[in-house]
Length: 219
Image 1: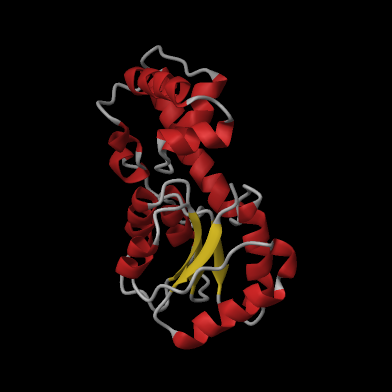
Image 2: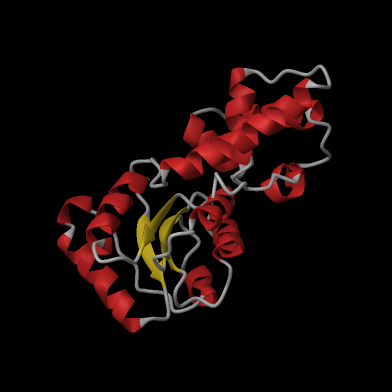
């Protein structure tokens, strides 16, 4: 099922610019919902999955937990974060990626063209994330795997794949949809993963709870 697009922002000029981008992207053929000026508006408008375009410049909240709350209200949603341009954004992008955000566009001079490309990519089920961010995230997952190997446990290839999705806070339903397997199978794998990692529940899989730090070279 195709998902709609909705910008969540309190900045009228940015909303107008994003609306203009969508109106010119005729090939996308997606429904554009009215903008939400706050989290409450976004959550209350619909419980159907959407591509949320989150404006970090005007929303006075942490985009990570915001994405988590939006996903809880509209399971299966995707997220594109609009960030102010800075040279030291990798650490922040890694953190937000771990919250399940699928792409980032910095509001530099050519952001409008990049945003069109990012939306197309995310709607196809791909990520719009810098290679450095993906590499750092993979290193976090690898460190976790190495830690559990010390206890004599081994994850299967499928379990390792699901582990990375769990670390991005995806639900069983979202993992099931993304991998093309049943929710019951996902639940079985999650139970095995938690058992092998000696964790009580999936909350222990977030990078923060696992004690991972982002080094200067990764940031």
